[in-house]
Image (cartoon, rainbow, N blue to C red):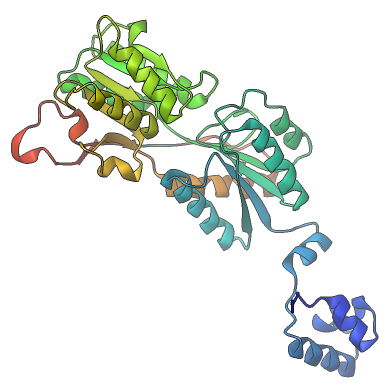
Length: 349
């Protein structure tokens, strides 16, 4: 036996009145008699009737739902950001509908279509690594549908965005390596079109310059952010004529892949080669050695993205990009000069 949500239509049919009469009776409309109001309310109570927020929202052209699209729903990075979005959304009386693009631009486009069919009022999105054309985003802008990007962003001159200071963070990583005595510092980068690739590359190069180290194209490798692609990039670095003594991975997945390849070669971290990641995944603390990484204020990113969404929705105006600061969490994987009792120490910079 199945049960379903009791609707206004069900109540109206049983009382032999119109749906509008039932609706107005439940809202204590003055045009409805006290007797009819009492009958409607008693029946609604006996049937456990509750208002359907979606149906009510459609009548007001407001569903109070926000579509949130992320590359995956598994990692702590996105889960924490989603929690921040949800907290602000709930405070505003809104709900979020989640979709994962799984790093596929086609799934990203499909997610937008599906969420529009579900009548979301707008979107908060972290784009996929495959996304190059922005036509599907521009179509939303042309329809005046609120849109906010976070972390991986585009159209930042037209759409509110939330990012961290990627350049400053990458610069800090390079300088940290230099201070630890490393001199051939490599960077395993990501897809060229991503803002995080461009910004972290700029920080890496600036860090080399400030440390008095030369730029060396042989120390820069690219991957598609997958574990296997990152391992292949690390293999190329280790097989080069003059391999690096330190590696900066564009994210922690890349750094973990590099760590595995380094260990397969019988090299010691951090003595033979230092390693730093970016995003400070939970696993950074439990791998051996613990991974130095840049930690994001993920919950705050989600909160700021949601705040920008409501500002955009209410004001219909472009908002200044929000750029948050990060911390370099220093652990054993990059502490070449740290030995003895303090090997497991963790410090923030």
